[in-house]
Image 1 (cartoon, rainbow, N blue to C red):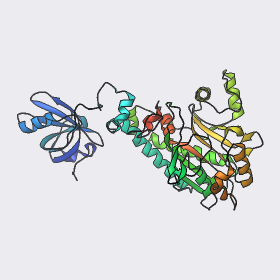
Image 2 (tube, rainbow, N blue to C red; image 1 turned 90 degrees about the vertical axis):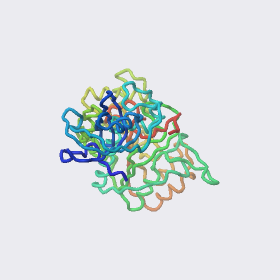
Image 3 (cartoon, rainbow, N blue to C red; image 1 turned 120 degrees about the horizontal axis):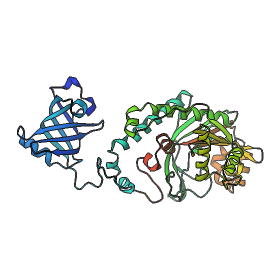
Image 4 (cartoon, rainbow, N blue to C red; image 1 turned 60 degrees about the vertical axis):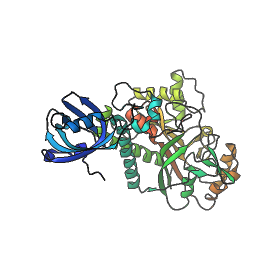
Length: 433
């Protein structure tokens, strides 16, 4: 292992001492008699200063390297208030660890921005940029906050299969695969397994789940492979119990992101922590508000992107960025959603600034009603026998939600394209890298 210091680990105690640093060569400025090499590591950048007269061989060696080559440098650390970090390294030994080919497919510090597809095609270089890394460092922090909050509320983490025998939610937007002699599907969500666990005594479960959805649209806020905080809880009185957990989870994650001072500075973002509780608004009221703004949405339809955007503008006028839409029409929700009378459901969505970031409900726990709803949704109960079995031997009232991590990050950091929020995006046209 190369024993090297990160750029931010070098302190005043290291001045006038020998240190070893390693990283990528970000830039080389050769002024003839002196050269400045900017080295980038996992924490930041530092300057290597080499004098041609003093160390001619090292001068020629360092100035001949290509940008983004990986090198290890041993040298004297000298204080210099005019230099970034307040110090520079005067090299004594240099080792090339990996030479980068030229030309680079993508620049890290070039002023001319590459197009989005070029960036994604060369994601390993794109991720070297501090502003791109900042997104994923914040992602790491908010997911850690989710774990912390949910465990404080007695939830345990579980892991459910991604290869399943039937569609998680019905519909045709599923990826089929050949599983030996059988047909199988990639899970649209952990829904069926989460609900089955409610019959076990594991009353509160969650997972950081993968969603696989074969939706053919190719928009700025859709992915065909995405991640979510997916949760289920038993012995609830209504969907309100689930909504309280969700809003407190979002608040905890948002607050944790606000503490990422360095990353937010890199991204030039300021985060205001939302106030609790979030607004609740029945679907009928939403439709009324949209009709007042001349929307053509019909009662019973799910909100499309334009209607969500319009609603976000309406709610912003009232000072609300987060808001629940409740009491959805039963026909617009999945088969497992608990009915509220004949017309409505106990389903809800959580929206943020005009974008849906979570969807949930109280679930049906009566097996007869569940079979009836499967039939009403055009699904064959025989295809769900393994799922239905868990409801036949004692199932408590329960509910849950799925909360999209990428969409959360989009709204948190005002990112325009969801592909920025996942390391290696999968969409309608992209299967690599």
